[in-house]
Image (cartoon, rainbow, N blue to C red):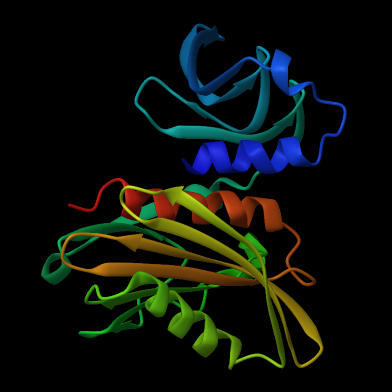
Amino acid sequence: MILLSILLSILACNTDSNIDNLKIDTLTSVIYYENTQVVKSVGLLLNDKKIGLWKEFDKNGKLIKACHYTNDTIRINFNLNIFQFNVRNIEPYKISIKIPREFREVKLNSEQILIATKCTNCDSLKICPNFNLVISKPSNLKDDLSFIIKNLGASFDKFKVIDSETLNKKEENYKITYVAVKNNIHIMGVLYVVKRIDNIYTFFYMGDNEKNENVLGQKYMVDEIINSIMFDAK
């Protein structure tokens, strides 16, 4: 779902694309040899050309390369630190979540998990978003969304929702994209709501799109964390 979301956003910016003729593989693995070593490359193909995030792994499963492709051409080579995670099992909520190794968990209580508010090495990552996982009992999801958006917006000088998307209608998973202003600095952010049988997990991050040099890398990193909640939670 996340990969499809990324793809659709890319296509939305490409006015020359002929939608009827697109051949899309949501996730493709390519195994090849480089200097006699087996390399596994994983990513998205569009009309048989690489697009978006592609990762390469050695024969032991170690990540050795991460790139952003446009029309089969490498545009960005990412710092691999962006994709280094630890998995945190949060037993009371029966959920597992990836936490970037450069970040630290700072708060865990019955209502909210503040996963990371400060990098241990921001200079190397060039990104320092805030991550929150808010847990609540299910009631009316629309009311929950309204409450969260209202309180999130209250922390900014200006706040505007620019896009709302249903990721999975059956499971009632939603993605809200917003822009905001705080102390004359523009912020971009994404709010995810993942509804489960016993709980509603809302996950959002904020990244400064004026100071961060690698906003795209940040987006891919957050997508991986979101995947760890959406697909690994039981």
